[in-house]
Amino acid sequence: MANVSIQDLKKTYDGKQDILSGLNLDIRDGEFCVLVGPSGCGKSTLLRMLCGLEEISGGQLAIGGEVVHHLPPAKRGIAMVFQSYALYPHMNVYKNMAFGLKIAGSNKHDIDERIRHAAGILKIDHLLNRLPRELSGGQRQRVAIGRAIVRKPRLFLFDEPLSNLDAALRVQTRLEIAKLHKQLAATIVYVTHDQVEAMTLGDKIVVMHDGQIQQAGTPLELYQHPQNLFVAGFIGSPKMNLLPATVTEVLDDGLQVTIGGGQSLRVDVAPGAVRVGERVTLGLRAEHIHENTSGSEQLTGRVNLVEHLGEANFIYLSLTGGQDVVVRGDGNRTIAIGEHLALSADSHAFHVFDADGRALRRLKPGNVVSSRHH
Ligand SMILES: Nc1ncnc2c1ncn2[C@@H]1O[C@H](COP(=O)(O)OP(=O)(O)OP(=O)(O)O)[C@@H](O)[C@H]1O
Ligand SMILES: [Mg+2]
Image 1 (cartoon, helix red, strand yellow):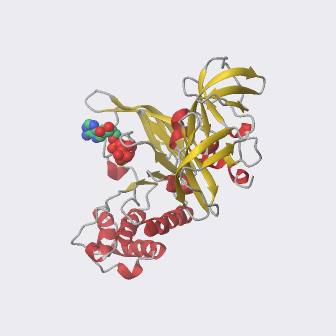
Image 2 (cartoon, protein in one colour):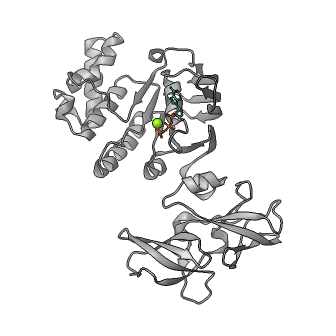
């Protein structure tokens, strides 16, 4: 396996608008790196440039210390698994897995050994004689992964590999990919639109938008310390609540702000260069807003919709000032549409973003795990 070094990587089509405008990213040997970002932000383009299906417009790509962007795909030691399995329909599973190795000139014995090994890992040993059309979607995707494994690549690229599978199979195949990553100590770059996949699989998550990397870090770093408004709104499901606010007082260790409807709130952040009168955005995760029965509420809202998940509810409310928020509540509590709830949030649970969307430093970042037990 190998590390990946992406330096000042650029992509334009016909010299027009930048698709990628100078990406810098290091992926460690054996790291599971997840790429996320809105549709069209260039995730697939980046994978295609890594494996050589697309030319780069500038910068440098190196794998295992070797500059590879001028090499043809077959010379890069990369295997890619796509959303559509792209199996040869007239070949059985065994032949599908053998095909690339045969072309590369491996001998029969070696090919057989590699296929049996990969089939064992993926539990598709009993399917080797079947045609793709005789397999379920999940089985086909495992064959596609098997075809990648037998090539013993330096780097695996996955482009939304689970998005064609039903919910149960997605979970199962996700766990298998996690195991595979450990077993093979593989370096993986993995594209997904699924928050749970990104949070659970990634050693590192890279958020892309506007041709740039908005932030790269561990799943918890991104969840707890989004460095700008885009990442704050992108990472996490349900989305972080974002409320426009005006600064009324700058303190040493926080700000006093008002939100629409006139409610005044105290937030614990390093004020930095923020001044009285400045427009900021407050960010608050659903699990950090609590129903308040003590009478010291900071916020009140009217319930529009309740989603029952079983162990918890997502309660969608409109605050007195008109802003919509979602709150994570106790699953055992029955809540009626139209009910008025008194809410509160700890002053240190707030994220604050300045007028340019940059996060102010949090002084006591809310701990995701313990905050559920308030
Ligand atoms: N051959 C091409 N010529 C011109 N523009 C292209 C070409 N291929 C892709 N693009 C553009 O490049 C941008 C990035 O596309 P890409 O497929 O990488 O997005 P993505 O992040 O993978 O999106 P999705 O999540 O929808 O798969 C898009 O705006 C797309 O329209
Ligand atoms: Mg794509």
